[in-house]
Image (tube, rainbow, N blue to C red):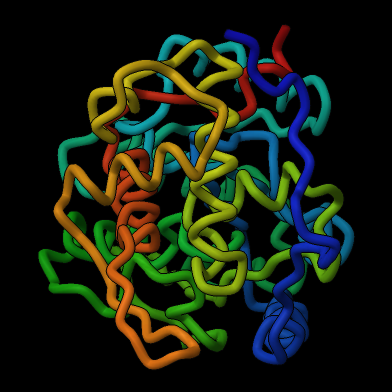
Length: 313
């Protein structure tokens, strides 16, 4: 069977999400730069090249030590981690890339973050903060990649304190730049959590869909049916057919309608619709099936992935 070779969004409306709190948050981050010694940028390891906001480099990066934390490594293809680090170093000049799983206190990457930040700060020009005894780290990134989770796991690891910021699986939980939160006593380190900030205009449809599939955009904004369709396209393009059994299909298909109807039937989910003449029609609940399909991907039920894999060929 032949599958789609290229992805094209089936709606004319471009993917865009830049609510007011993002613009405000970016301005607040710029205002706090004088009190910051190091930037930790957090991103999703499943999309290491896609969706990272160039505004960070243009407006708040440059002279500060910069660590890139690629989180959710437990869901990403670890065979590609070294190639990803090399590519980012070559193209962006970021020497320090750490892969983490913020749900695991014993993650080796988690253990590296604070010592590395301390070393970089000690060996950097702190400008107006030269005489300050404390170190201050600002955590930046797009929505729902684990910024607040990183802060909380650091606080718990180094101070044995419970979480200081709210986390969740929905993009946009953190709405504003917060005050400094103590992470460590020796050395004395504070972290500043910030809202996830996307580009005002996402470059292309496929990048937008990768962000949406990874949960960096609210599902309802893009539409679960469109996200599910992109997931189907990507899995077929990689000859990844784990979805066939999961969705109750007999064979791979390029039709998202077929996938969702089969999934709804497998789940036994239907919805009732009233027709124009007042009668009731029972149809498969394809929205529930789309959510079921997407959730399986995000939970790692289809295996470890790198949505940017084609960029390394």
